[in-house]
Length: 295
Length: 275
Image (tube, rainbow over all chains, first blue to last red; front, side):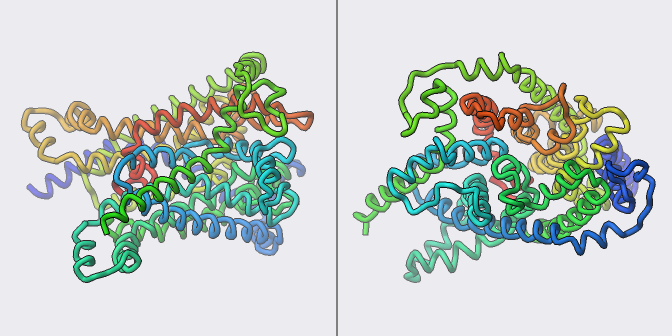
């Protein structure tokens, strides 16, 4: 009887899953396999017939000695680590505030989360417009109130990268806020009552109760955000175009340019494979968290 | 001790209001500019008050024809979301109701797909599609958008189906419903709000998506985000028009997302954290 039911389930599961996984494997596995295959060739648009020149792992050899790749990877890591940690800090502060206010919490949360709903490309535009040295409101405010902030943001590598990090924090700190707020709301009040009886002050309660209980949620959201930030493309593409020089050319933009500006399709494919493996490792860590921790 | 509370709350509210005003300022500035005349838009010092006009909207959508891109975006979004929901719902239901020992492999595969950088999929899709001659067709970009929406639908909806008690299904089965009928007539109905939320999140993902559309669409199928960079010209950019496009792209997203705000946390974490 038990095995019969299991067999039935297997058949049912197959029927319900089939269409989704059939389509999904066509749209993901085939392209991935194709990328991998292409990365072993020497396909460039400028070289006629190069689609069929097999060169084995040479693209990878070039890649691992390519200063452009390392620079871009470095920029991406700085970008990801700084934006995500800032987002985490801002998220913790804002969620604690939202958690404490007695009314209008829903309305304030709605207003806070607006930036993350805006298309990333439009965010790039909003900031281009806002910080335009000729007529931007930012420029005006900085001059008028004599704020100690630079007016031209895209002339120096560090300033450009910092501006992009601020844009990312602007967009995604609400994400952390919202998730942490959900986490805070799920913490039982009893813990705090017990702490009150023991005479803990607010600071102690935060470090000894709130933070440890929030830790799994923080880890999950930081990891998710980091994976998303690693894929950043839209904002640098429209705001800085990867410049000045290639100071803000994050890894997705670098790969895109190798493929669609230099038309080195095989080399770009090798980059894609490396990028994919990198994300797979992060994804593996994420999945460990998700399967083991009960949130 | 009690007297301290009002002061504390006042500080918190003031901080929140200040934070919101500062962070939303660039966005409101964009919306405001979209309704301004050209002269006022570039005035220095900036003019907050100006006579309002719809000229920018008319110029960019009608005269420049970006209404066509808006339409492309809508077609692609509706098709991609429809396909992803149509394929994803049964699969999510099966994960919830017919667990097998291969489930964890399949679920990990879905996660992997969701986390794959778009450029990694878009580059081979571009090369494959150019061979099949489906670049710059709706079909091509819809396929690409399905690749990231489908795993999302399955993960999200699995969570919603999990929260429906299994006893309800058993009762329907005893009444003589087949599993497929139970799924269609009972569980889909009970998961309504989850379906609504998932649909909105998918639609937003598709609507805001830029990189794949940039690579896979062309002159006839360009979506609205892809049409935007074309407005940034070296010979004097018309910021009023860009602001109008930015406003039109973002406002519907805001409205729909705030309607399903309750589910946003589970949407953002693919169900890992429940709201």
